[in-house]
Picture 1 (spheres, rainbow, N blue to C red):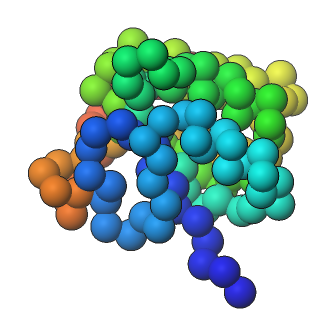
Picture 2 (picture 1 turned 60 degrees about the vertical axis):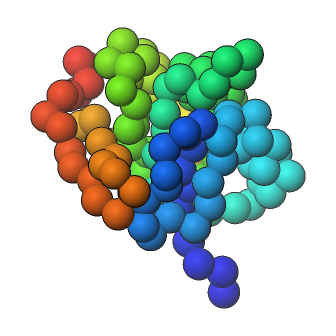
Picture 3 (picture 1 turned 45 degrees about the vertical axis):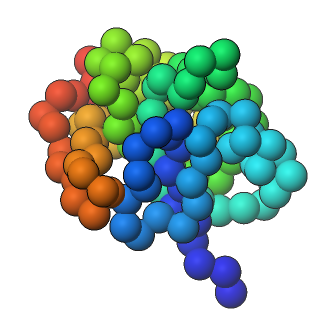
Length: 130
């Protein structure tokens, strides 16, 4: 039996201990999900700013709602506060509308990756609609 996937999406940060997949852009994650429709993700951590000429986290979240993969928990670790609110609120509103049924939980606090990825902390910045 395969380990539950813990996926970290970020163009720069080192991925934290405990994650077993990292994607440096949203396009790569979406390609993986389209090719592996039955995959189960226990945790998905998203950045907003994913590199120049790349889709940002907000567009990635919109695509995730359309794909509706099986994700137990989504959290956000972006330093872009507006992007954090846009991504999180889009997902919350999609769930309220009966979409994104494959996504079970949205973590309302911003998550910060420190140093080499071996440490992290929750910041008490909450999504507005929670």
